[in-house]
Image (cartoon, rainbow, N blue to C red; front, side, top):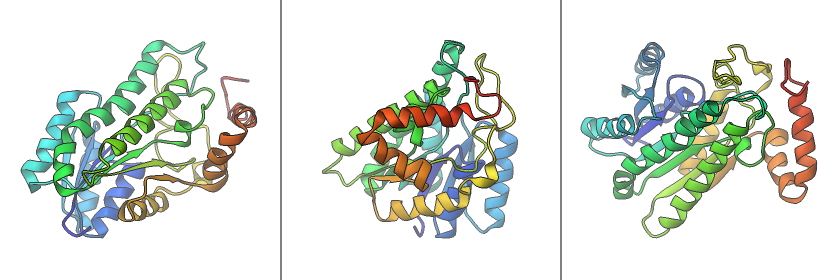
Length: 269
């Protein structure tokens, strides 16, 4: 990772910031982007204090021109791109029958189109360096999670998109890694959208019982170095669930429903 240039969207907190620290610890030059300027500045300050070379760019990945500007900023600063981590994302928590359709559109704009835009403009540079494109999806990108229709749909779409990008680049040397964390401690549940599009605020889950973002980051960086195609994190809610869904999807659907129904103020109670 020495002197590699790594772009991380959604890099001001959670898995994104943990990845910035881990890649930076190994000698990479880091570009982080986020919409919240205050959090972005704080993250950049932390990384800099850790001795990491960092460029912070305020970007909304749902806007194509912002994504193009992000890629250009990285190239103008360091002249190359080695790794793009499509990490920016938002979630939701509402039954489809109750949800305003604008909620699903917003999730697709950020989670799916943000990945498409950034990948489109970064790909020529990553092809030159024979680098990596990474997509952070979720177990929700392998199974349909009740109350998360827009989230699951967007993550399934990202997985299909990046799997195809990998296939198209078999002969170019571009590496594509799709990462599906199980429940990982991050702020994505705090900013999840409710049925009317407002943020739910408090997470309905005990974050302390989840995989720490720093642990997830170390595993993702290791998978990047090994040029793996896919990585599913956590055992029971990750690897086992994805495996079981291949053979017993009906059982997984019932398990997912019962699991989500137990959440405080679940839309299925």
